[in-house]
Length: 149
Image (cartoon, rainbow, N blue to C red; front, top):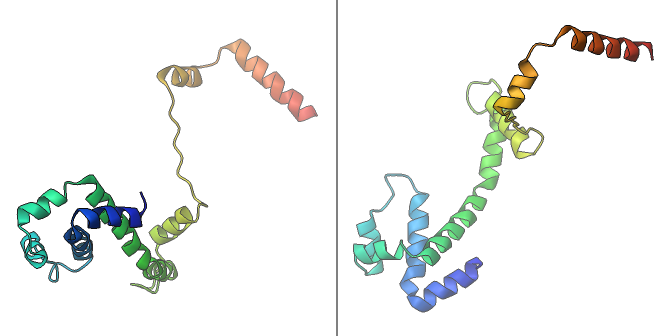
């Protein structure tokens, strides 16, 4: 379901659920000093704390809150990008460009990908076992042949 369908479903069940979701998500984005308690939010909605708790267990309510949070994050995108550029330039703190910021920039742009290789014990033993004399001679012959061409 998209955000509008989720909102319609919640509104049809109880319009206060939509307002509750907005209050809860907005509360997550304010400072600790500005944040309201669950009791304060429930009181503002005119419901009990238990009712608010029950709503927060509803998968549709949770999905709607998640979608609202995504929208909120998008609102911060330009701020985040500008702070990242400041860190890369070294203008955000001590004047030294941040290697972590550069790393993050390249990861976000898809130009840096962390890779890891999983090797089974059998593969590891084949790769690390010493070569015998015949195998060494064969590999040397192959290398010499490649050098001639």
